[in-house]
Amino acid sequence: MKNLKDKVAVITGGNSGIGYATARVLKENRAKVIITGRRKEAIEKAASALNVSGLLADQSNLSDIDVLVTKVKEGFGKVDILLINAGITKFAPIESTTEDMFDEIMNVNFKGAYFTLSKFIPVLNDNASVILLSSTSATISPQNASVYAASKAAINAVMKIAALELASRKIRVNAVSPGPVATEIMNKLGLDDSVEAKIINSIPLSRLGKAKEVADLIAYLSGDDASFITGSNFLIDGGQSV
Image (cartoon, rainbow, N blue to C red; front, side, top):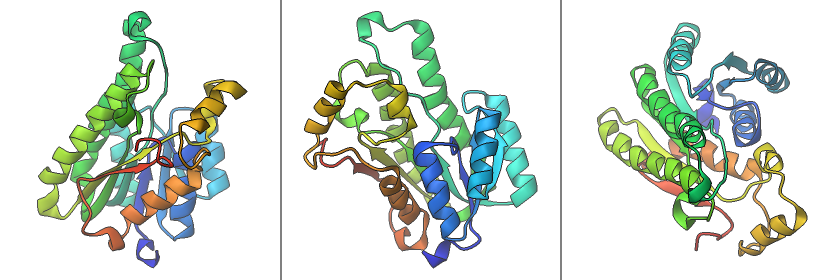
């Protein structure tokens, strides 16, 4: 992917998991990478390890997004690649979901992602690529994930409309929807062996995905080889949603 050389790439939630893996792939392909995160120590550690720029920003805080956009514009000019990746995963039955939990998930996964896109549009280069990290949860409707799945379904709807609104500038907007991937978030969920085995049994390819596999797909969509792809949602889930 030589066409990524010197492209300015912003990755929200880039200090771990898929965001971190994508930052590594884009850096290896000589893009200028900026990662963001809401934990100062974590973002500094990740930025140092990857040899990329790190900026502190909480995607659920619109003031943080404003500051982030200003810093990126001042330090790097226009943006060529925007990966809106920051998100949280929490599960509960509909009956026991609290308003606080609902607001927390929606504020990060949907409201934060929406306004990150909105506020970055003026600093996107023409022909830029925007990728929104969605989830197969929006497709397979897993129990106990109603709010999380709804937040990702909302992202998918916005992605299609953004693709139409930005097409005149040749800015491409797509979504990538991973299934279960072995990341820090999966570890935080505290899944025991029986639950993990059940998840793997639901995947035709009989394994969890790897963050690098999702990162490679995102990197492809970021480059000129994908210049005729927009408004699409790419499922990368080992066949789980089939």
